[in-house]
Length: 98
Image 1: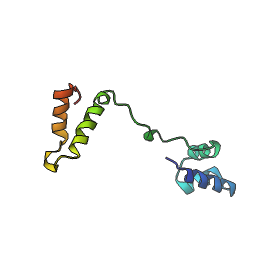
Image 2: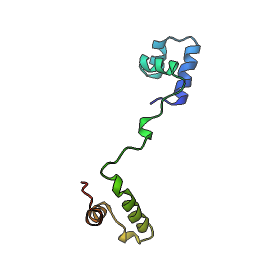
Image 3: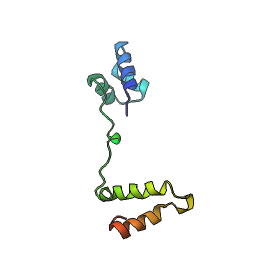
Image 4: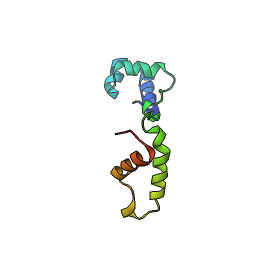
């Protein structure tokens, strides 16, 4: 994923008179990526920055957050690990997740 700094360097190289192939070779990108950097005003947002949907876990997120908040004040040996948390979700909240 190209950052704004990469885009600036690509544009600077183009203003310096380098060809698309030279720029692609210099920065290790394809010529399509170089053309995209030169034609678009700014980079598109990284799709990984968007939170992913959680259709199975979503309804139980508040319950897990409450359990973990309560665990923050509990002694270390009494905090939930993954397996007990999973069992508690299934027992108390009716989770069908795996």
